[in-house]
Image 1 (cartoon, chains in turn cyan, orange):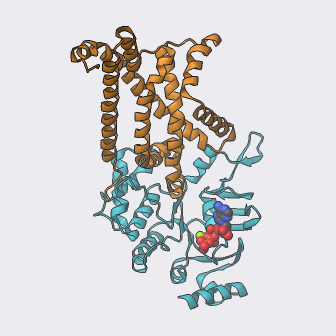
Image 2: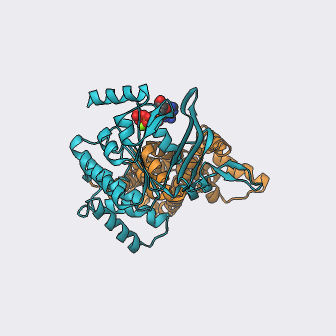
Image 3: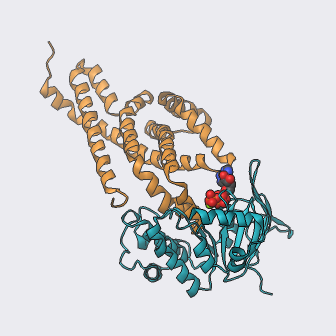
Length: 259
Length: 220
Ligand SMILES: Nc1ncnc2c1ncn2[C@@H]1O[C@H](COP(=O)(O)OP(=O)(O)OP(=O)(O)O)[C@@H](O)[C@H]1O
Ligand SMILES: [Mg+2]
């Protein structure tokens, strides 16, 4: 039985009275591609953001590669809340791509990709440049090294953002609606990069998406979110072909009608 | 009728220029300290740790709400009673630097607040240390839009240097007053000091505008 690379155990997250993650449990195997779908406000982004340590959780524990991320062992062996240094140590295994790209506007594409490997991993500049060039080639931007984000299309910016995250060699990649800010004709180029990532790497991937077609074709498992919990999950065939829960059926038919 | 006496002006020029060196030293050194300390205060005030952000906020409000004159008086005339002995120049530079640090801190804060949240999230997702994040990502973006405001404070600080004559610093204005009281001629020295401030203010403003152009973040 392989240990899951990511494990959420009874995770609860609240904003005031609003419970956004409600006793959530989720195991993700190494190399698994998980798509997360569900209505707006159901907590999908919060799940990814908690895993990236962008949000603190109120209860429960998240572990990555058997190491607690949200907690750390105190001197007496008990688990206490992780401090910043512990979080930095563990979250290095995770990378994230955002809906709004979040590229550094004052740096060229190449500098965007090189920055963290040099500053965080301590690579020398030559090595970092080689790694960055390779990745920019991989995402189809070999010609655009010296372009600034303002000189790139949305699809190109998002591909730089993917290269930037991959340059840190994460074991787990998080994608939060990475095509939602793009014109429809630009989605394809980003999705095909993600598709290639899925095939070429043994990377674990968690993606929040509204594109059911892509989720169905790409993911090993679909998680349907509702009110801060995984309401139903299964293989794409199970979940799309034969959903058991009313809510799931309802959501899927609403999405179908809209598309 | 008292006409401008050119030969008298020529005669007092060396004294005024010598005193102007003090004005320049106070302004440049003071501003260098102010922009550095202001940044630290701004970051301290934004801290999530209340034990840091509250005292810093209190200090900033306190200094901004009291006159520079009183602050330098304290530094020069009161603090020696508690063992802190500073020369007039030292007290003057420190006082004016601290005073303006609190103003620049608020400017920095506005600049830092204007950096989109997404930049912080990217920095976290790339696991960058706070120091690197500030230096390479956040500050370059925060600084560019606030340069004009910082430049204004540089000029304002220059024009506040005569306040330090109250603690016996002989900057250019004090020197002009000394000349006036000795010779009973104020027209020439005061006019010359006015011109000095005018030229320097315009020069500094020009310099700041050029700097802005150089620091253009990225091609648009
Ligand atoms: N900082 C915050 N303060 C208060 N409430 C928040 C905050 N961030 C998110 N929420 C609330 O938490 C709930 C879940 O948000 P989340 O972003 O996880 O939803 P989502 O499933 O990603 O939705 P969408 O499909 O619209 O992106 C929403 O109701 C949202 O309004
Ligand atoms: Mg979301």
